[in-house]
Length: 178
Image (cartoon, rainbow, N blue to C red):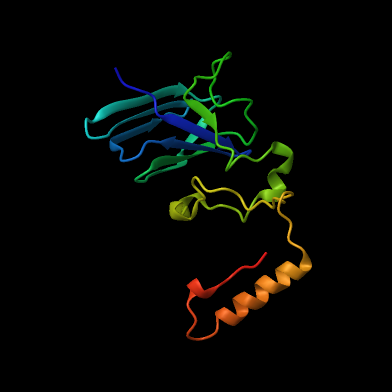
């Protein structure tokens, strides 16, 4: 009996990002059918444990415009939707989503925010999978309410770092006084 790896997903109106977390996957087989049938199988680990996913995606897809990339830590599949519209869920079946399917919050954008965060138009024939932000966090600003530096402390830190970063000074000479 095969196991299910974690499948993370996110979407845009014309794309679905599917990331399968399976380090050191071997014998990877991916099959995507126009009506939305998605099949994945691979082995992983020293014991070549089999993993498999077999799901029906919410709607039809364009197989020719979809792209896959197999990396050492995960498998990324950019699935081009047949129609540019938002899906209510990843799988066609109603009811509870399978436990191995998770939302990829690092790539997720709400429908009304898509235009704000969208980058330049993506050419699917020239997709550079190495530039995708896989597993990284976004560049969001978080304030740390517990530890706020006063202006004097910040100036002191900046002056000391400037002094100790002169030629010949090593980074271990930086002292921070609070």
